[in-house]
Length: 257
Length: 358
Image (tube, rainbow over all chains, first blue to last red; front, side, top):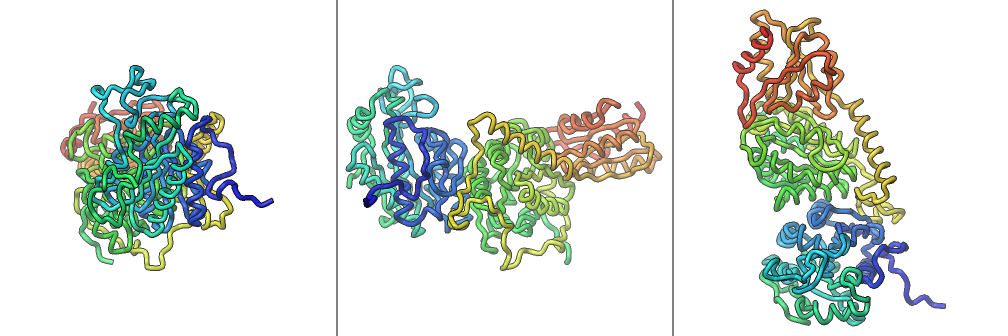
């Protein structure tokens, strides 16, 4: 019998610790597939974050760093600047990247560091038990916003893809989602494209992926996918925000493609 | 080779290059900014890379990543910046990455001042960041010695897979002295860095045989304990093999034994020589490694002295290690000034005279 679907070479053959229904596994697979298809697994160095993906170094089938909270882009900067021939990527959640690591991600992007960032936005701190993140939706209940996120008290969620795209430095910036098969295919294309820009030595590449957290959202896996569509996508518009071919300048903001 | 007159900070930058370091990540802070300034010009000349980070937090994590891919790497800072780097230093120690960090110490706490101090002794030798870890800490007393110790630091970092700190007070960074690089020619075009089979250089580089992982996370308490035991074994080996110190005037009986390091040791030496010329009997022990601390040499030297004093540009930090070394057999006195004040020869001489006559 012909095998037409198997684990990509970019992933290690081990069970993951992710909760049932969580889409981290899907995103891991897309990264693993992209690395395999571009034949980059053996040249890749990944940087795991602190958060739900803290153990990602056990899952990606390449050399890996485990960074301190939010500092993955600084570690990746050190690695890529010293060994530009390596394919370096960070895999970070929203607490890690958009809160404690805001300085590191913005400055790495602004310097045009030629590595790839996979930014998983699930609108909550998953690992620590469902606290409010910078990306938590207005009114969303979390363990530290029990009455729902009050935007008068703590502001609106941060749109990272648009924030990064607003920098003058050329980059590839996209936001994708993995709550439907069609979106998963688009996400795969964006992740692959990000690695292609890195392989060509073109620019910093950043892919924000809207993800689910059934456990801490208190929703079933399917309901979670619906919640992404109904609640997150309208606030976090999908699409390519910026391409290096556009040259220096702010990105296109919120257009769809 | 002729000596050149160089500012300490610039000599430190050049020493790193002579040690085969081609990568620097750092952030400006007084009184060490001449290091990044010097290397921003010098590293591109030799095909190296200089990156000005957005903060000391980032700079220290950049060197973590750089060490992880197997290259010799340097960062430099001064006290408040080292506080910010302490997070990364804990991770770097935990994952056993070789890096060299230079601290050109200024006064604290808080923003403190920008003048020379030795008030980061506790931070450097007792921790700084979280967890059970140790830095190797080297303390130069001259610009020439700063050069020698920076070069040694790169070798020790690789040998022990451990972060090494060269800690000079602000004076070491800011003063100009003649330096001889004669024994340390710059690496030639065929220079290759020491091999590091543990580094993350892509699995292709080892025929896809295994993955390398740079990590300090051990969720299983038994494994985490085992990691700590492994580190302790390494620190014990350092303590056994890497103590460095200098002793001056080793006669059998002295009235006062002075313990001082860095710039302070030079001022003490002048004061001691003046007092000896007047017939007083004093000796000097200068620790060169602050961790591992030369405890046994201090204990032995103290056995030959009636009185012992630690003299520092702080409110009294190293004095605790002198007390530990002496083990309560004799009282250990302290003299020092903080805040960026450097005790003068006259002040030290007066303090020593008072102790002799007490």
